[in-house]
Length: 202
Image (cartoon, rainbow, N blue to C red; front, side):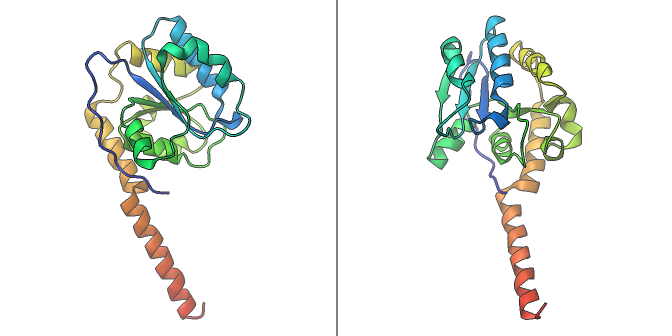
């Protein structure tokens, strides 16, 4: 898995925080929990923008369609972005990347979003506790789905979340482990080892 650090867009003054969903539109990503939190934030009068990316297959969970009308004032973009540069630029315009997944093998989409400058709010399960360094667990991982509402409400109410220094350190950690340069080197090293084993008749 490889990802790159992305240049951030300049935030417009007075612009509400953008919440990013960057997962497949399928049941294993637990969209019901995600939209439940968004609707509660809307009911609480919170100002936020919503960017929903990810690939949609023939049958998406009904909650996507059922939530559009109520969330329409918040929605800035929905749907799959095929162009890679446009996709990364869209990530860089968001502040928070959220997951409610109940199945996740690694989470490359979340890593890409963090490397684009999005602060992660992720469940403390699956691959996420391994992807996010332990020193950031308290601020980036939540225990149960109900806690996501609390975390997002605090951020939307002005809680600073990760400091600039913490975000820089998190991005540096993920870039060192999963960035394109380190991943390419690891792949090259492995291919070289395989070739050497073949030449040696192993």
